[in-house]
Structure formats: structure tokens, C-alpha cells
Image (cartoon, helix red, strand yellow):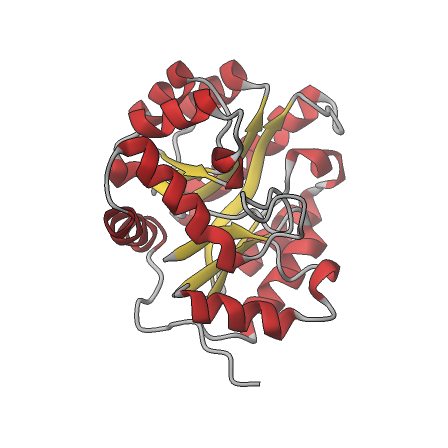
Length: 262
């Protein structure tokens, strides 16, 4: 299985990062995709990925930090994107729940990163919250040439349908395991298995039975179990197909598997 979105390069893992990676390896995680949230954060993600077999990264600017991106930062993202460890641009998108950056700025920075993805021919990692219409509009105007992954999906079924029509993949996190996430499980049942990804978004959103703890990649199996139950298929099928989806979307080298020897 693959954890297709996490942030374990961050300070919350400074004390036991090798142990976290080892537990992931022992749980059967083949690869991990770490995802940057701003330019300096993306640099940390790339440094971490470069130091570990089976760890890849995405570089980009989260909508929370959109007001910090300037031309120099965009040029830095482009330079980092040329590294073979970088599989995608992101996470990018719109967040109207917190509005940490002004909405017009979020839209502009999202557009700039979509343009860069078109220029470089790379897939994208998308964050969207309470911004379904504007997200759809911007993606329709500038569709990612190599597809993308709308991560930590919590939206409606009609929104999921629009994203699927745009040839995007949809990722589910530990939220799908929460007792009150009935509507989200219905969406997971609707999304075709060959367009679905599983992720942890560590350190956030630990799944049941680990809810309330710091999340980590080994817990991604619990997400797969909830997806399997929602779709009425075996967990083996979910693990097999979502792993295939990851390699098809991101083009990672399948021979590079997570290895922790320290």
C-alpha cells in the first residue's frame, strides 16, 4: 500500500522519525509521498525525500500561504520540480473555510501553479475546502496535463462527479473511518476504484482506532479498510488497485521501496 499524502518531514516527528518509517515499512507501505505547503516547507520535504529510499515528494504552496508566494518563490518551485524525487506540484488550491489568504490571492496562486504544471507536464496535488465551485471553474480553465489528486476529499457527491469528469483522482483520509462520516463513505462508494487513492495526511486526521493520536503512514491501512467496506470489496482489492493508481498517476519508480536500516 501507499501513503499518497503526508507531512512526516515536519517537527512533530523529530524525536522518532526513523521509528515511524520503520513501522510504515513493517505495515506494508511500499512508498510515501510527502507534500510541501510553502516554498521553504517544500524544500524540507525534498531534502527528506532525497535522504530516504521509497520516499518521494510534491512541492507547492498551500492556499493558507498563498499570500507569501512571489516570483522568486515560483522560480524556486520550478527548480525543485526538476529534481527526480519530485513527482508533482502541490499542495495547491483553495480554502474558503479558514481564508488565511484573501480569496483573490488564493485563486491567483492556484492559477500560477496550474500554469507551472502545464509548463512542466506534471500532475498536481489539490487542497480544496468550502470552495467547490471556484475549484471546478479554475480546473476547467486550466486542466492539469498529467491529471491530479484532490486530497483529503470531504466534499459532496456532485463535486466528486465534476472532479472525475475532469480526469482527476480523489483521495480519502482517516476521516472516512469516523463514525459520523456516513456521507463521505457514500461518496467513496460512488468513486470508481481506479480513480481512488488512500492517504493519511499525517500528522493530522488519525483514523479510528487511532483517532486523537498523531497520525503516521502505517495507519493508512485503516483508511483502506473503510474504503473496502464502503465499496463492498475486499481490502486486498483496494490495496492493489490504489497502489496501481498511485504509480500510474505519479510515475514513481516501482523498484524503489521504503527501506529503513538505521
